[in-house]
Length: 274
Ligand SMILES: NC(=O)c1ccc[n+]([C@@H]2O[C@H](COP(=O)([O-])OP(=O)(O)OC[C@H]3O[C@@H](n4cnc5c(N)ncnc54)[C@H](OP(=O)(O)O)[C@@H]3O)[C@@H](O)[C@H]2O)c1
Image (cartoon, rainbow, N blue to C red; front, side, top):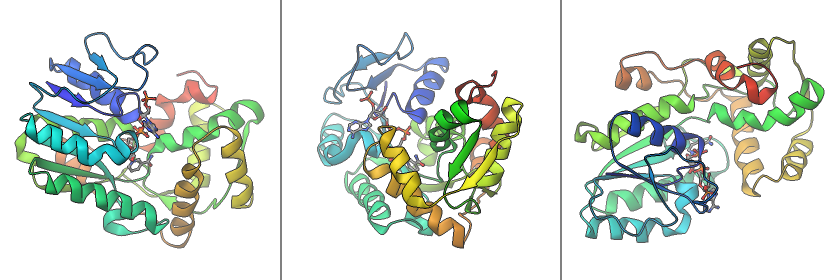
């Protein structure tokens, strides 16, 4: 049995699906089991307290929050063997506001101190963060964004999920910290162009001040910390592109998925046909 926290997130959902397809038993944690719309076959719970029979857990820091210490103590006491943590490249490469990297470092420290076997997945910015552009693309056919030249190797959630599944199921990945990125560094303008290609239209990127982007995101109802996370990291990437590694290819034995592929997979959300 594998326990997945953050099961309704872009990575968690994909991990649940892949584990079920592999014939594994899955317990999925969500605050709203009734409306979570998780695949049939997963045991859906509102708290990660009963871990009897659980071999490994996926830890999504945002979902677990302050309870990470409690969760790890309970996991170790109930015989869980492995923990896979969704961490961030900023732990290793810096970038963005230090407080966010510090929180990921603290999560890694807590997992290390738990005595469980661990694998840290230090992820680049998720391509899925760019779903924040979807409402304006659908409404206006354009993107008003900040730091158009900021470049990073955004990662497809499918790649993170596939690496996570390997690490959850196989102790060979214990003690490894994997810096996971997409295959190539692209600017924000490039990413908007590729989304346009995926939905069969030319999309314009208009540079606006970060403050306007922040206000727009908050008006969309995103949690308070999200604009600082994204804009802080973009400000760094405007000075120096985020890292690109070959780790996804090394672990999975196939190239990391491209941003163009990610855009095609999400075309419907941007108003195109998928
Ligand atoms: N986005 C990035 O660029 C990035 C980069 C590096 C690392 N990460 C890490 O990767 C992890 C996975 O990201 P993700 O986008 O798949 O999902 P996520 O942000 O972890 O969210 C997963 C689920 O957690 C629950 N949740 C969200 N906020 C919460 C809160 N404040 N308190 C309690 N539960 C909350 C929600 O589920 P329910 O409503 O169903 O409970 C949500 O669907 C994150 O935890 C993040 O720390 C993200």
